[in-house]
Image (cartoon, rainbow, N blue to C red; front, side, top):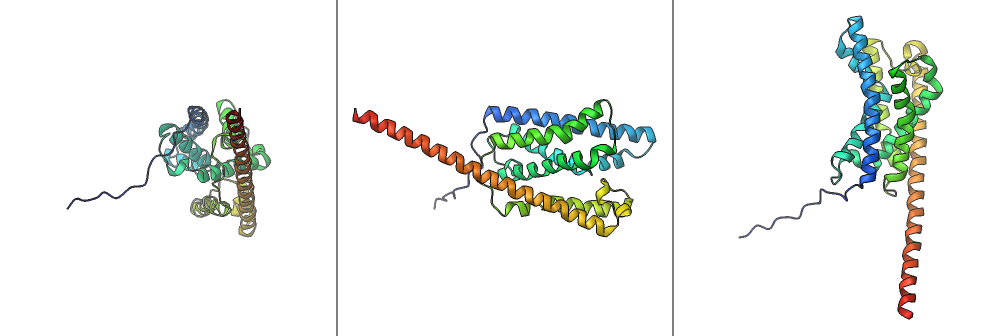
Length: 245
């Protein structure tokens, strides 16, 4: 008896255009530069002070800014490396979540954190890359290149999982080491109640931005659909006119 192979779901997606891959590569390279400089400076500080290098690396990767930029770099690298394959990090909803995260990174840093330290030299350039350039460029990348219309109204709630996980990790790590990455979530300075309120306020900002991004996604999809419908109708009218001559 001959065995009939069961059909399998396609694992490939339409190949990503060269222009999009080029822009993704440029943004990813910029993010690698910023993260590389931050990591180098942390390792250099560890060597100068004689403290464990591993602890400085963990500290560097315990900032929401660096974690978000790292995820963006990985997502854009996936776009460049496998343009014909569908992967988790290349999904529109994942890219959209990263847009929300990086916008919050840029806004919170500009309003609450920029005045707290004065980087110099190459670290100043890395600071501008991670907090200014990456939020702007990745948001523009999302607007121009990502397909629209696939986001659901429930997505912004799911996108809160990463900020919540970061907050829990930060609180646990801070309780053990007594170190917190940001002053507005430092219970040693503000108390647990104030930190909880700050966390709820930040999560509300994440959620509102997520809802706004979903609305923009749906509006752009509707506008592009109407534009495509008009083009198709115009082409059909032209063909009908040609046949009538």
